[in-house]
Amino acid sequence: MALNIALKVNDLDNVATVFAEGVSKGQEVEVRDKKGQSWIITVLGDIPYGHKIALTAIPPNQDVIKYGEAIGMAARQISKGEYVHVHNLDSKRGRGDWKENN
Image (cartoon, rainbow, N blue to C red; front, side, top):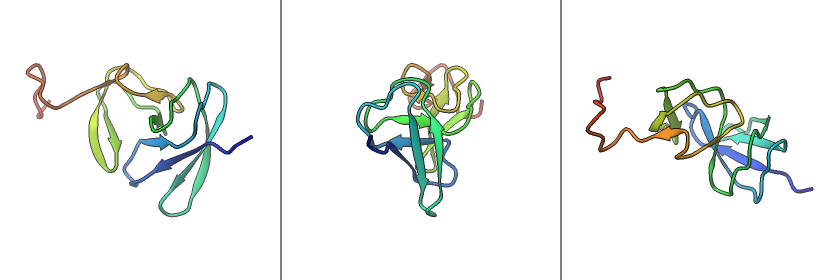
């Protein structure tokens, strides 16, 4: 069986990008960072190639960090190992109902 890899690019990141085809619920992903460290996370649901996996639990309204930058905020509780995408991530840009100072 092929090794499922996910990359954490920045120390601040709370998500990593999955570089494996067809990662399914219950499978393991080896997360690697730029320092050469690695650890295993169990996937909680299917994650497509090139998409994000949560490295830690992310509470509602907390920033989701990728490449050291906030790419949005958690729309609900996101569990470690969960697929992170538009179903549980809200944009913080171009929203009239949310102010940066919130």
